[in-house]
Length: 122
Image (cartoon, rainbow, N blue to C red; front, side, top):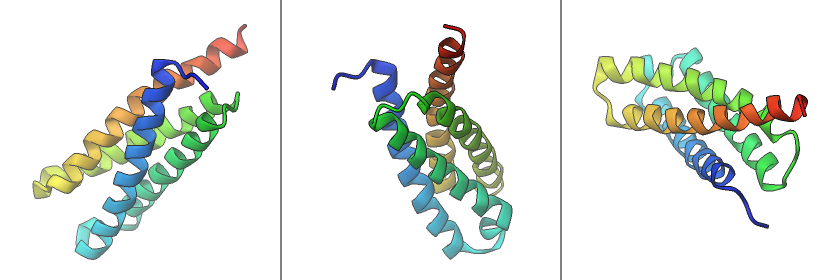
């Protein structure tokens, strides 16, 4: 199955983001304190889960993948913002990396979600 460049990039970014948020979640639980606040952990979980869901939809060629990518982009944006807030206060390289990974994923997922708009108006 041949994939276009944007689709493949989004698959790659969702794969990396899922892994990064999952490992950052465990890291944050172990660090405790502000790292383990419920809202922050929830954002990491939301991001990891929506990445996994979008990845699954893209890999199996679902025509709904632009919609799951839209939700994923929102979750990634929120997670990146939360990671940046804590990273700026702590200068934590793990959270800086997580924020950067989430931003890259959000960017490609936003692009993929635009395909839903085109499909709806076709």
